[in-house]
Length: 169
Image (cartoon, rainbow, N blue to C red; front, top):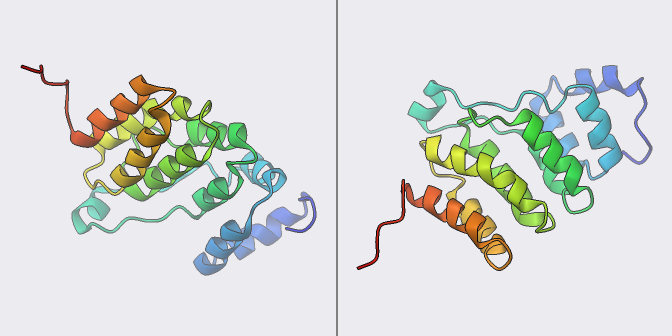
């Protein structure tokens, strides 16, 4: 990763990624937005694990190593991280580990980018049975509160499972 990516790297990466440990290691060391963009162009972020019914029943979910690279680059290339998330992590994804990573990206990026991820996170928190991402969502709400209180409140309501705020007597 000390040099720019080349098309010839694709076959090597595909072979490397057959071994899960090497795939995890690669993405944990990937801090270069140029590499992340290259990998995105070649479909490496296209299929985050969605969270199957079996995983939900067992309470064991498949991690998303590629999300670690997004965490690594999000402060320096927030628009790239947000674009990858919005185009690949759909509202139908029920994997709390993926949503935890999305929340961690939202927490780390510049606050002007954070609101663009709130609708996806709110929808996910309402549908994900395991509340693994709730702590990360709380941190995102805290980051949003000073400048974007409406978005922060949307996250808080989703975390609490409220459909509407009860009237105050």
